[in-house]
Image 1 (cartoon, rainbow, N blue to C red):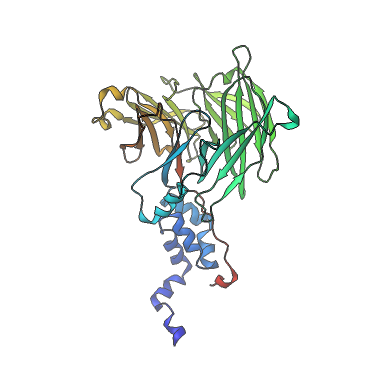
Image 2 (cartoon, rainbow, N blue to C red):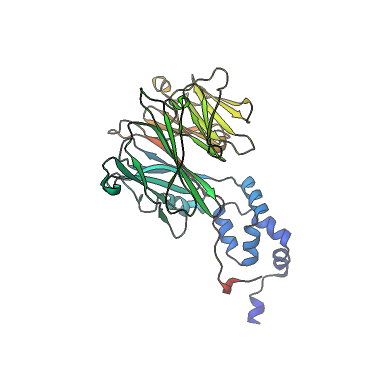
Amino acid sequence: MEGEARRPPACVSKVLDDDNLLTEIIVRVGFPTSLVRAAGVCRRWLSHASDRALLRRFRELHPPRLLGFYIVEWGYPAAARFFPILPQPPELAAVVRRANFSEGLPFSKKEGDTMVGCSNGSVFTRRLNFTSRRNFDLDTYELVFTVHSPLRYEGGMAVLPGLHLRMPSLYSWAQLFSKEDGDGSSYFYVTVEALDTMVPTLNVYMLGNGDAAWHKHLTLASDLLWRPSSPKGVLVDNKIYVATYNAIVVLDLTSSTLSTIQLPHGVGFGLGATVLSRADDGSVLYLIHIKELQLHIWLHNGDNWLLVDTICLSEMCASFPEDELTSIRINHVGDYNEYVFLEMDQYALYLDVKCRTLRKVCEMTADEYSLGDIYPFMMSWPPIFPTLSPARDAT
């Protein structure tokens, strides 16, 4: 009798025992965190929740959510602050707290760490180490990158092998890129070294998934890379796109070649005026350009540019002082043309492209001279599913 009392009603069993109905229920749970909890019920549920077809449907119904953003002050070392995007559903309250590392960021200006990016639920920091010079070579230094994973229930921090570099004459641009690779990630550290008297030299260092050390992937010298106008490049598949003042430079990591994409007609690059963003619909990338309070969004499909959207910011900024509107610039653009972070005087503005809403999300303090770099923090995808014990191997 006791066992029978614990059995679910016949109507519930009829639904849950039907794989098709169960799949339709699981795909509608709403958040990746709920999907992971559903996968923890038993191996049968885990099999459905982790199925690739279901994951594709789930992402279409519930795109990865923006949890908040970090603001990193300029200079070295640099402090970072986390700001949640509110409101958030109650189900994600604990997730947002973990994005803020619950009790504060595990890196600080005092410790010498600088945040250099966010990607798929991970936070990347960098530290320059001048005391670990190889063979006492005073012309070398070490870069140490750390990958923080605050959304994992057990937390997590991975320190990548140190990258030993020679002291540059001048780095005009440098960026760390990450790429999902099987059950882990590969990393590329790209630098452009340039002086007025020399041709710019591009260096790409690679740390493959499971590698114990970095290796130099390629070195190229080209006038195409003279003074990139945007500090943030974009990695799409095996190509890196970098905005310069008169074109977009494309670095093909597979063929080790450089090429260019001309800008849309009437568009010119300027710091804070034009930013690139990844596209996920079979196209290549977006170009977001601001001019006279008009935000223009262009899509490049590999052959041509298409103007897909124009947003009039003056209508949204009607309540802002007119003298502040002239200073609006782009700070960061989210992947897939979903949102834009703008900088206006001492404020950070969040523009939801789809909902056509603009609001202030941060204000500088009295002792701050500049807003700094914004790094959006998204919920990770795909989810990391649990490993079930034999005791929960139910059907």
